[in-house]
Image 1 (tube, rainbow, N blue to C red):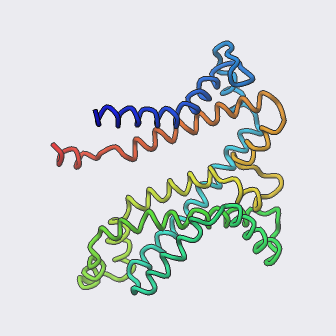
Image 2 (image 1 turned 90 degrees about the vertical axis):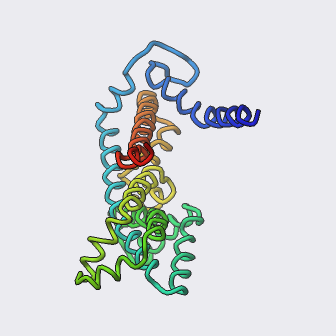
Image 3 (image 1 turned 135 degrees about the horizontal axis):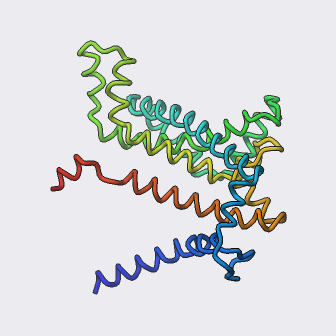
Length: 264
C-alpha cells in the first residue's frame, strides 16, 4: 500500500508539474490563436518563429548573452570555490555566507542595485551591454560556486599539495589536478548559469539597453499586446526550450560506461 500511495503521489505531482507545458506544446502545433480553441494541425508557429527577423534577433541575442555571462560566472564561481576551499576556517565561513546572500536575495533588488551602481553612480552608458552582462554574471556566479564546492569537498584535499611535492607549479597543479577533479561541477554550474540567464527577467529589465530584449522581457511585453502571430510563435519557442532542456538533462545524467560496468 505504501508503494502504491507513493506512486500515486508522484504521478499527481508530475502531472501538475508538466501538464501545463504539455498543453502549451500541443497548441503550438495548431492554428489556434488562444489556448483552449483547438484548430487544424500546423507548423505555422514554428515557421513564424524562424522566419521573423525580430524573433531571430531576440533569440540569438539572448543565447549570446547567456553563453557569455555563463562563461564569466563559471570562471569566477570556480575560482571562488577553490579559493574558499583552501582558505582558513574564518575566511571559508565568510565566503560561504557572502555567497549565500545573492542566492536568497530577490532578483529585483539585485537588478535595481546594479542599475543604480553602474549607470547612475559609475556613469556607464545605459545603452551599452556592460550593465546587462555584469548583472547576469552577478546573478549566476553564486550558483556556480555552489555547484563546484561539493565536488571539492568530495576530493582529497591533499591532491594539490601532492602535486606541488612532485614538482608541479601552482598553475600546473590547478589545471592538471584540481580542475579535472571538479570538472563535473564546473559543467553543471555552466549549464545552470545559462539557464538562469535565459530565465531572468528583473535583472535584464533594469540593466538592458532600450533596444535589446531577452526572451523573458520580450515574452512579457508581447503578452501585453502585439500581433497574434508573434504571441503564438512564442508557444513554439517555449516548447523548443523545454525539449532542449529535457534532452540536455537526460544526456547529462546518463551513466557513463564506467558506471555501467561497475554496477554490472
